[in-house]
Image (cartoon, rainbow, N blue to C red; front, side, top):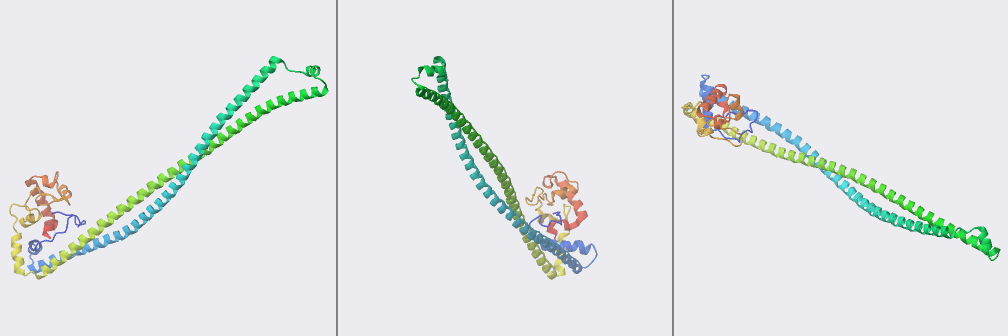
Length: 347
C-alpha cells in the first residue's frame, strides 16, 4: 500500500513475511546484478534505516509529550484559578442580590410611608380648609369685637392669645405634615438610588463571573484536548516501538536466511500474473479484493492505495470504488516510481 513515509502511524504495524523481504532482495540485488548475500545486506540496511527513522520520530513524539505535559499542567492550573475566582464572584453576587432584596423591601416600605404621609397631609389640609371656611362664614374677629365682647382687659388678652395659638397650631400642623412628606420623599429617593447602585454592581459582578466562567471552560477544554493529544502521542510511540521491535526481529531473521532459501522465495515473488505488482503483495494487502477498504487509514482497492496517493497519480473518486483497469493503471505508475517501497507488505 502506498504510504506517507513521514507518517508511519498511518496504519497499524504489520510484520512483513519472508516473501516480502525476499522480493526486496530481488528488487535491489538482481536489478543491480549483485549476489543475494549482498542484496540481503541492503535489505537489512533498509530495515535499519526504518528503525532509525522510527526512533527519531519516537524521540520527537516524546519531546512533544513532555511539552504537552507542561502545557496540560498550565491549563489545569488556569482552570483551577478561574474556578476559584468564579466561586468568589458567585459569593459576592449572592451577597449583592441579598442586599438588593433588602433595599427593595425598604423601598416598598418607604413608598408606603410616603403614601400614608400624603394622606395625612391631605387630611390636615382638608381640616384647615374647613376651618378657613368657618372663619370666612362667621367673620374674622378683630380687636374691637374682642374689646367690646370682653368682660375686661384680662378676658380680652386671653381671647386674643387663644385665637393666636389656634392659628399658630394650624400653621405648625400644616408645616409639620409638609416637612414629613418632604423627608419621606427624600428617603424614598435615597433608597431608590441605593438600590440602583446595588443592581448596577450586581450586573457588573454577574458579567465578570460569566467572563471568568467562559475562561474556565476554555481552560478545561484546552486541558482535555491536551490530555487526549498526550494519550494519542503515547499510543503512537507504542506503535513505533512495536514496529521497531518487529523490524529488529526481521533483521535478525534476514541475517540467518540461507542464500538458497532466499533464491526460492525471490523466484516466487517475481510473478506479477495479471496484476501491476507482484501477486504476493496484492494477496498480502487485500487478498485481491478490488473493493477492499481499510477503515483506519482509508486505503482501498486491491492494491490498498491511499486516497491522497490515488489523486496524486490522476485517480478520480476513491480507490476502492474505481474499476479494476483503473486500479491496475494507477498501481503500475506507483510501482514504476517507487517499486516495492510503496507497500507495507513489501517491507
